[in-house]
Length: 244
Image (cartoon, rainbow, N blue to C red; front, top):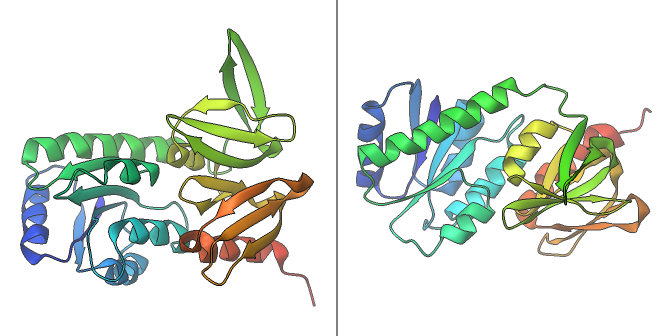
């Protein structure tokens, strides 16, 4: 497991590095002092996991997590937020964090987090590169088959993901991050709580701040946030490039 520690406090980085050194399966550890540096380090180091402080200058941890998912090629690194405040827990899990650690964390608590991370990485490795072709959704005693090709966009709803299709919007008990891993590169995040199927996108409409909406076939719209706009446009570019 390749780990990137991002924290603006040097003692906090050193403490977490020391705890990681006592754990099995850690292949390499790098550090960054803030969100901006984290993006630069991650582009070269390509971490499997990022331990992110939330309160940092310029680019905070939530923004850095969104930027990492939007700009790095391939599967986004798994995120664990590490903070001295418990008031960010809801926002952290809305950002699809695998875990949320309160400072000062101890070795036992970190060990449980690493077990979750290993399981998630195993699931990711076992997923077919092309992604799932269909999903099974339980609805009042029946099982509904939803083809991945029919999904226009995905939206988080508490412990569920809404599968927006032209025929309806069934709920699947899953996290958005895990579902995106299983569905593969056909889908891309456009918001921390939403993702779109790339071949169903007709237009990306953004305001001066970069927020806006993604217009899909059939008139559906998904929310767009500035943190994910660049990554979405980059993913759309190959499919939209016309021959000379």
